[in-house]
Length: 177
Image (cartoon, rainbow, N blue to C red):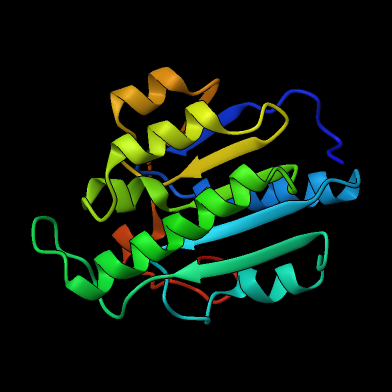
C-alpha cells in the first residue's frame, strides 16, 4: 500500500553538481516519513560511491541497484557492454515502477543514458505515461530532452557557476563520490 496518493514526475538536470545529491536528499526525507524508495543507477558499474554505503542504513525501506559497463561511454560510440547494461537497468526500472510496490523510484543518470543513446527515449516516455498514479518518479542526469521536460511535473536545472576542478582540486571522497 502506497503512502502517496498522487505521484509526479521530477527531473534534476543541468551541468551543475548536485543532481544525484538532491535525489538522495529526497530519499532521506521520504524514508523519514515512512515511504519506500527504490533507486536504479545507470552508467555506474562500480560500487565505490560513498552514497551506496549510506543507502545501506536505509534498508529495507530504500533499496538500490546499479547498472553500467566499465570505462567511459563516448557519444556516438557506445560499447555493446554499455548498451546491454543500460537496457538491463531500464528493464528492471520498468518492472519496479509498474509493480506499484514502491512509493518513489529514482532513475539516477538515466538522462545521460538517453543522451548517449543507450536506451530509446520513446521507452522512457512510455514508462512515464504508464506509471501507476501513486508512484513518484525521479529522473536525473545532464541533457534532459525537451520532450521529457514537457512531460515532467517538476524540472530543476543545476547550473554550474564555479567548480573546484577549475582550480585543480581533484574529486574528494565523501564530497564528490
